[in-house]
Image 1 (cartoon, rainbow, N blue to C red):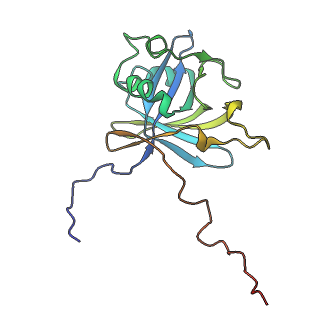
Image 2 (cartoon, helix red, strand yellow):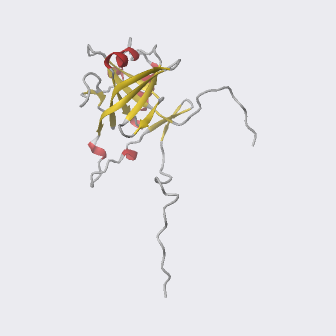
Image 3 (cartoon, rainbow, N blue to C red):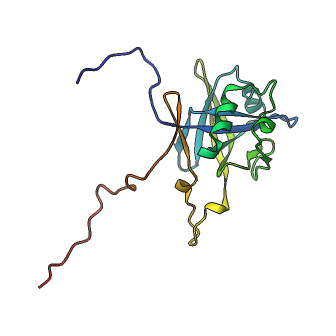
Length: 195
């Protein structure tokens, strides 16, 4: 197998395509699409987002110290793209995308996107100015989930929401399940021989 060596770059795909909602202390809010986000710690629950300082939402996040990671779905793919390519400086993305700003339960300023199946409410604990992007390290203060995806036993069925991923310039649906965590080492039930 022949391979080419490219210059250093970010080729870690697929990534979650999420819409981040935030607001300043005067109540002006905005939505931006982020693919550079992820989990960094379980206890306490912590996440990060990386944002260019030129982005319209950057000052809101820095000023309020709050943001919400809203998971996106196939039904939200147009809004997800739109919120990543239009600036909130001269566009009301809430109106243009027909999205509803709802109240976060644990934050003072940042709203959640009501149409998202999962809203991860976050409070910034540190900002690392890394270069082209600044990383906001945040503690998760609460998670809202859409009750319509709860099964009869009270389990949240996240994988039935139609989640999106972003890979090399394209939005993709997550597709079918290929296995569950630990399936490769799980013992198969033994079959008794019939006499």
